[in-house]
Length: 424
Image (cartoon, rainbow, N blue to C red; front, side, top):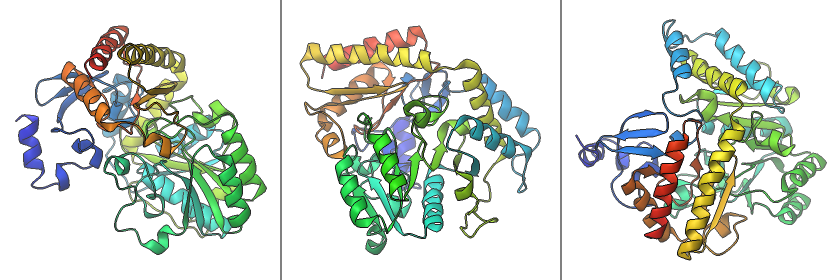
């Protein structure tokens, strides 16, 4: 069966034919392809196409698809069972590993997704502070939990509906939304509402609205303000954790939050999430404290094995310099091609992440990102896809570099990107 046939079949039994909205290609048009297999930096589709992949399973594939060491770790764990329903050593090893690598984490609780991690982190902050309100930033996406799906990025932007139906208005009122990179708005908010605010949650480098870079000292000033007003600072590092450095964005920027949420890479490609932070905060979780959180399959042994293998690879290979060099090569080609074509655009990158905003306006926040021309992105996306390169099927997502992108694939990708821009 080809992709179109499978998609038509899927729409009869899966809402929209997909299990995550952005996969439906609504943001770019056309029929989504279905993947048969993946290896290294390539996807192999049901239509017998080989695609250079810059989505990398939306972040987890730091070492590419089908990595041998990660597969071997999963295989070894599989021989012992798929799920126990009891504690296992691998959970402890994972917690120890995260605490040793992420500066803010003195204790860690494993969960099954990034959404669970952010939801639980906010509940913990509310329970610890005995305050109800949450501050988030427009365009930052923290999963689809009710309190945080307010002016979110990613698929919500693609569909032109930042707020989802099904979220009670009274609950949404407990979430304060501020513009990213605007420290004065934060000061104003804290002066009025700090007695009601339990936490501030943000992606330190927003990556679900395209990639937005924090302005100099923004994160440090935010840290100081949260400390001054006794507000918990939560870094959502589901994407940036282990992508920007072995200690995440917080290590790279020298800013330590009170709680950190993680996902993607810590599962080695399998579904995993985690949240961790200061001991005095984390000990408020059940069974020690009164903040309830649970998960039947949390700490699944196969997921722990895959994640531990990925983190071991990070420690042994220290891949960040290579990832940065590869990203810089791609970004240079994109910028030069856009300049030659005369297309106004902002190209952002940091370490192994990059994105293009088709606008002449500098992009510092969500409102700026919305000025990006989605119609140009659609042409850009399909030009690349037709030539064998897969970018995110949304104008408001990042591209992800992996260590499996070899010199040859980088050269080929550069050629495709350049030609695709010329034909916009």
